[in-house]
Length: 571
Ligand code: PEP
Ligand code: MG
Image (cartoon, rainbow, N blue to C red):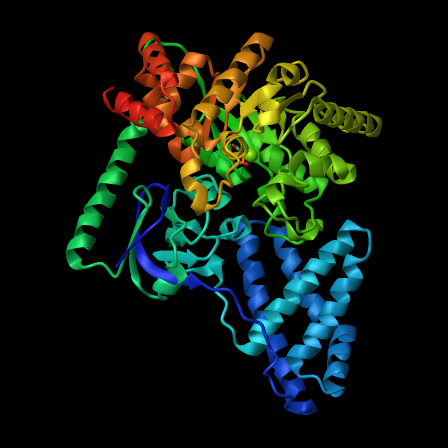
């Protein structure tokens, strides 16, 4: 059987299916077995919970760090607290089965903690909810897949792979990823590329058609999935996989070369990252800096806001990984498809148009200041960190953020804590409002970075993760291309640097246009650094200009993309 979807992360993944299904925690059909039997079930489930959670804590301690593992050990302590155990046992005495007793008592605690206006307490609420769900799944015997302990050669199948799930993956063991939703710029896709795991997204009906243990081939370029392929197909794809890996290794000759066009003009080639570990990989991949650190990933896969010290340590580690290079760190960009449960964000009708990114941060100055202070401090030694604001739509947002930054500087000065006074503050240009007022925003920004993922979504009024409107989601639309051109022009006129950190920066078809318009910096995932450098090497200015003129004279996205495809191939 062959299934089709969107090729979201290149490469051929061959392995066995592990399906992540939504858990059904409905216990309405469980019959009360009497006090003693229910208490015994509770005791056994609590024991299993503690054993499982300690194993997870041990794993996280090794993979992530001591502090993160303490969240889990804290959960064990919470559940074994005598007062809580007594309350659950009392509920059983009153005639509830173990499931209902756990649900009732944990629910009561979660509500109590969530009602307190204190970040720490809200973290507790998320912890208790987590305990409740995991206890219910143990009691009901619903098996959960532990994605941090997948066997080698796993092809993961999920309805949706949330960014926090992806963060917990052990990438060495994952041969491929298949989901039923998500597009080329959804965050699962971005993470899959960062991990260099082949991924096919938006495969309709994948979780019904694929069973655990099925043998699978994932072609992350073409967007195809072969389920239980025959020997011939398997042989063919093993060869394709070898070829892909060989081509990748050939790019190694570009590793220590500068990023220049065929005439020697220099461009900056940076990497996009989501963690301090990735900064090391980016440096090793030959990137000349970091063009985008998506800090929201630091806030995920945990139950509370990372403290100033924790954030400082991460930003400092990134700064240390490339002390001589520029590091652009984006402030918290939550909302949209990036949910962080403990932040207490409300469910919205239109999350991509809602209370997200800079809007959310400016409304929670105490939370925002933790990050700004950590950034100012981390920049003190190498002075190589720049701060970037996401989803800006007006100059007031920049002013407010700058005022808050100044306030943080004042506080640090008073406290005698070292910080970098000259830190630059730039913005992502990723909304039509910012693009149309780029000349005004350039007057108050130290730099621009074009976020084509969102810019395309908002310019075309098309959800970047919705497969039904996927055809409309294209950076080659004349509307998006004109927008990019005018943003670069505005930056040039204001003499501020302009980069691009959206996924389009790694598309070879756009390179002649971006070079011609004067983009200063390309920021791509680490896995695309060398391929992008190799593409830039191919172009002379006059040829790039000719191709750009021709492309911009065309009136349809398919026409432009088709033309650019053949122009790039003929190089
Ligand atoms: C973008 O929108 O292009 C971007 C780089 O940011 P993100 O993908 O994190 O929204
Ligand atoms: Mg964006």
